Figure (cartoon, rainbow, N blue to C red):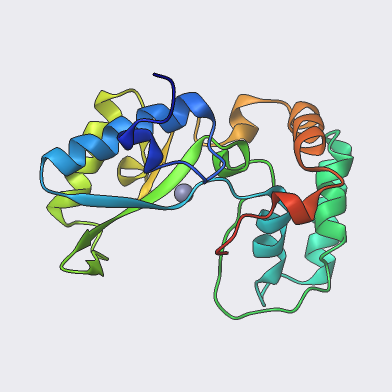
Length: 195
Ligand SMILES: [Zn+2]
């Protein structure tokens, strides 16, 4: 009988690429079998949301954002550049969020997810807890790349592609056309709940 399995239902609704989602569901099932309760907290993050995060940092000035947008335009990414320009005067916050351009992160491709271990009703925040070592090892055994092994460890993050970012895998002109075709003219629909 067709239909989602119990395992895949744990990762549905997060906008993930179907093949990546199926593999991630197996990783979470591995964790469950070992007694670790992992739950996904973020999957797809739209380029609009990524642009919000990029521009919101108080130390990033409108002039610096204009400069980044010009660089993107020169690389053949006018649509992504426009996302930054539209947010150059967005309300700022003190806490740093990201250095990644919209479209460069695998979250924008539905090929990355952040999952956290829950224990006794609470999220395990220590990235060096053994639960994250198990999760990362299971992810790598199943062909994913675990953020725990990044030069700046990101214990909850896993992604499908080996390249650290889409900007290392594709030309900016290609990133721009894929992002525009998937997310152009429908930002309200594309923004997932809970952000
Ligand atoms: Zn992530």
